[in-house]
Length: 430
Image (cartoon, rainbow, N blue to C red):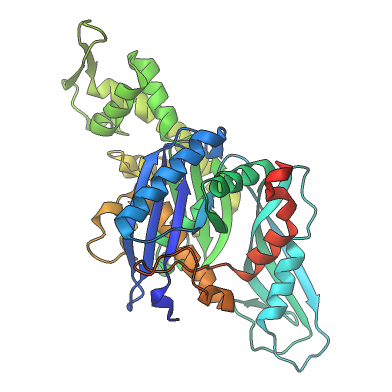
């Protein structure tokens, strides 16, 4: 079946919202969002599932809404993973081939990738993803795609992403209890990068900053290769908490203040503008200065940007990132946030919207807060293209005759790692 007929679902389990996006690619390679379901996230804290039942209920509600809007029965999802526990490391793999004459195949690369999954991790950690960066064939360095070349010694640099086994288990458990199957577990900043970055930006060198509710994800690209990833344990929610404490109001009012009147630069706000907050149970309304609100937001944003800038310097690519910084996620909607980034880092900054890959008319998901969801669908297609296994051509039995059929887009090495880690995700072992 043609890839255009494939339908992929992205499930973004975030700290503030859980969103299920149903999409397919049209004949021009653009992503058409068929339906989207969104619900408040209660059981997730800083990107990690802390309460199973509320999270299962929220996933079920979001998926049902997406099914209703899209007319698609959802069985298989691509799920994002984030959180403070995410680590990344570099490693080099080597494979000696039996013949110098035979061409290098995808099987040789898969062997190298599978060897990386055998690395010994810290107790309680597991490898989430293995990303080949560049290859060396018989001491010829800097090769992006060695398939078809001849050589006896194949080497590769890998960017390896690890996370806590318990965090991954809880995500699998929540999705499984909601009656769904996990096709791929994908690092959220990698998904967001697919949705908002162009190949030219990745080639030139760029920093993706995804400001979510509980965490801020950082991914650095250069020469089209992922070079550094990090997760900062602060996001939009901590700004809301600061407003709540600083203005002595309830959390719901603080969130509304942040969204409607918040600014990341106090100098760009009027000193005379006042917002009246309704008092509790007949009490007098509370008057809050918009400039004071901006001072509270700016103080916390500066702290977050300092940590982002530390990660940029720590990567060793600080002066090589021609495309500067791209901000996405819900936090990117804050007024004047790009100006604050430019002021503190000296790097060109823009807001990243997931519109580049979307069909016109997908207005419901053009906000930066849906970059991860759209990116999860794009990652699902990317891994589907890499494998082209017979399994991806099978139609899911549960789909009704009237509805588009769901297909499974499982990458080869994800099949392998799921088999190896089956005991981790079996309900009997949790």
